Every structure is written in structure tokens, then in C-alpha cells.
Amino acid sequence: MAVSYDYYRIFYHAAKYGGFTQAARVLSSNQPNVTRAMNALEAQLGCRLFVRSRRGASLTPEGKQLYEHIAAAYEEIRIGETELKRSTALETGHVSLAVSEIALHGLMLGILQEFSSRYPGIRIQLFNHSSNEGVRAVSRGIADLAVISSPFMMSPSLKETVLLSFQDILIAGPRFEKLKDQTIPLDQLCHLPLIGLAPNTGTRAFFNDLFRARGLDYQPSVEAATADQVLPLVAHDIGLGFLPEKMAEEAIRNRTVFPVALQESIPKRHISLVRDRLRTLSAASDALARMIPSEAE
Image (tube, rainbow, N blue to C red; front, side, top):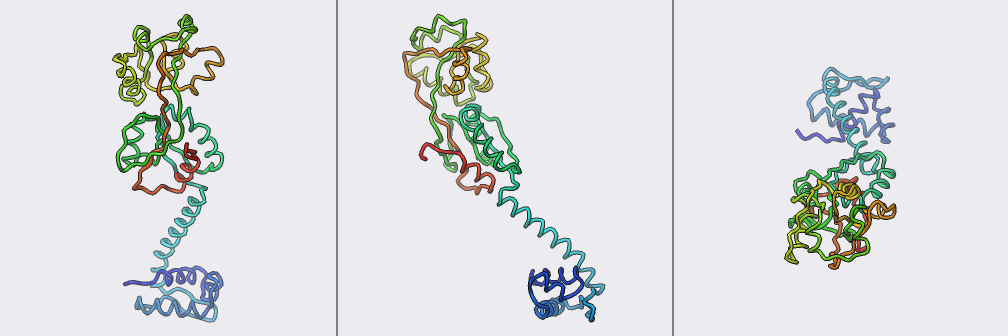
């Protein structure tokens, strides 16, 4: 039986306010329209729902039975509409973001600060992923967005937007002060203790390729789990390490570490936003994506 939702909406208000005139007032309608709708509903259901009197309209036993269900359903619909309005107005919501350490420190911290200040009701879930793990998280629907550093593997269903370029530099601590005024070749690094990231990271793959292109083997003495572990390890003289220039600039300014000049140039890398082409973002995730500037802008 296909009964109009509008009939049930009118029934709910007529039952709740105890009369057709009162319901019409709440619904910004008029009493004859409400009466016609309730007559039609009773005809479709095959039973009387109201007892009409000069004082208003009271529910019959069948009307009370129906009202219990309609009231529960109507309240759920109203709650759903309210939540939806709050979500689209960005008063509430949820964003899941896969972000690499380099992307977090090189770009996203300031953006997340602004986003959380502008939309305090939106919950942000961060996944600390390597770049390739971030791509997989978006592909599997675990994360709405990924902001990650190159290189990484992409699938055709994903879209990449390049956000900014950055430069890796080699840094060292006081133990290696003799290197301050030197420009050294990459092959000399093979004889020095190096700190690098784990083999499953894009950064490790980048430096593997950089050294391999010159017939060298990149074998760090210490493998760090994330990029932000490299700086304190270098500062404590455990070895030399490559790090994005922005992540090292404060420590260089404070003379905790110093940059080491290389004969060979290191190609620039980039930070990218990755999203699923086939999946529509929530209002909250779309708002965050729009706040992230790209190189094309």
C-alpha cells in the first residue's frame, strides 16, 4: 500500500496537537486541506483514525496504534534532517586523512590548524602513513584523502593534484664539523654513517634510485621509521641524513645541525593530494580539500 508521506506528516501533527485546526496552523496550511488529507488517509487504510468533535480530534484505538509508529519514524526523520543540515553547514562532520610525515610538517600542520579553528565541530582522523600506504588507504576507502610526498605508486581510479615542490638536503651534526666547508661527492657518503628511512617508504626508494643512477649502493647505518626521527638522530651525531629543507631549517638556524654541500644535485620532490575519482567526498572532506592550495593556483 503506497500511502503518501505527506499524509503521514499531517496525521502526525493532527494527532500531536489534538485537532485539524491546530495542525493546519503548525503546517502553515488550512483546516479544510488537513481534513481532506485525513479523510483520504482513513480511506486508504480502511479504518477511522480520529473521532471529530467541536473540541478537536482525538485518536481512535487504531489511530493510537498508528501514531506510536509514525511518531517514532517522524522524529527519526526530523533528527536526520537536522544532522544533515548541520553537516552541510559544516557544523558537524568527519574527515579521515592519510598524511605522510613530510607532508604533515611541510604543509598540512598550518592548514589543519586553520581548518579546526574554522570548523571546530568537525572531527579529524589522521593516519600516519607512508606515501604508498596513504594511496592504499584512499583506494580501500579507509581515508577520504591522502596528502603524501613523492615518489609513490598510483592506480587509475585515483586523482593526484600536485600541491608544492620541496628540496631534500643533507645535514650533519657537530661530530662531522670537518665537512662544513667541503663539497663532497655522493660516493664519499658511502663511507660515512647514514640515517635513512625504512625500505618500504617512498623516500627510501627515491634515494635508492638517486645512488643507483651513479652506480652506488645506498645503505643507511640506521633506519628510521618516519622522517621526523631523522633530525634528532643527526643532532645527536649518530650519522648524516637527508631531510626536506623546511624540516631542517630551524635546527640549522639554531646551529644544532648544518647542511652539507654535495657535488651532485638532488632532484626536487613534491607533495600531492590524492583522492578517489569514483567516490564523492563528504561536505567536511570537500571543505578540507578546498583549503589546500596547489602549485597550479
